[in-house]
Image (cartoon, rainbow, N blue to C red; front, side):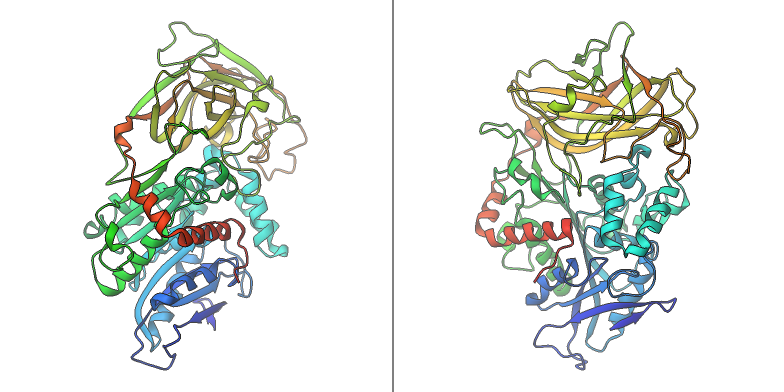
Length: 558
């Protein structure tokens, strides 16, 4: 059907009932799994068909301005209303049970999260994969523009005559403001208080949306309707969108994945329909109902046979951690002891010679835990390292860098990376953070003045092995992951942005430090039951790989 929205725009919507059901049968009582997507039916939308064998209806809808739907792509600004109208239409049909279950991977998941703004009465659960309840911190982490992700996604997905308009609209809003509100679900705005349904969130440590999905889990878990605070579960695999990184995590995974999140989604959807408590709705999940907790994730480790990490854990909640400071000394040492004297390290950052991106949480360029050694040989990249570790060292939680910085220019960037240094010399990337000064302090810098800034380095769960070292690097470019800063203070859409660019002389003061979330290995107990599930349901785990590939590519699924 071409379903009219409130403003008259018609959205192409495909409805598939189970074989034994009929569209003119008022006793059909069918519950639907709905996916709204910019990728088209033979892209991600068709994944909702996974639930047809369980007796669910499948609904795939092209978002406005994409594929076969009318209108202009709204950059998710209309999806709360469009989704609510679609759910209303489904519930009005004679064959409908008046219950709709939301499904969404990647861009589709962003649309699903926006439903918190309208909270349709008939919305009864959500399964959201590799997606985000946040807009600004994903596209402008620390105020730095994720050039490769944003520009390439718009060019690949939005209609050709509209893609540049969309890119310009995003770049026009390079600082936080009202434009981002429809994409940012926040506790401050009470967005999560409307959540009264069960939800499952499937994330990845190297995913492009990781922090936005962790924020969503926190909102659903601690700030939802009080009667539904315990109806939320999260599963974090190593990769998210980054399927090419699977070779880095061969231990206890199926190509970096697990069968568990799909098994849990069947259980959640069936429990919604049957009224059975989660864990008792499907025979497949029943044997594991006491073993799988609300928070399940892969504990990352080195690509070594005897690595301390590389296993699954499942917990009632994320473990408590001890925020631990590691100071960045003027001599390149990374120590827990605060320097007794001042000092700084200096480097020059030339916009005409940017530091190339090597791995990380990317989509259109190389992703995953790439070796950073090549970049560390550059004069415009500073590195700090600990001494070799005498025992395994575990971290789980958010990381950040508290920097004291100076520059001789009115604007510049700082990119911070945390790495695992192997005894063989590789520097494998774990996570990274960014600061674009003009979008952090919201004014020009006073040249050679000291500024305190914070680089959010997102989250991880990682165990450094014995004899490995922890390292941090800082540079002022990371291209094409982030746009290049010409250091002149001009905005992204300023026509004179590149009329002048300046080599910046930047300083990192020795009081700067990174803060790591230290836990004990006892806080991360290994769960053998997830390995058992992967072995028993290997085909379903492979299906998880297909879901991830669809999320990454919006590919055709035949």
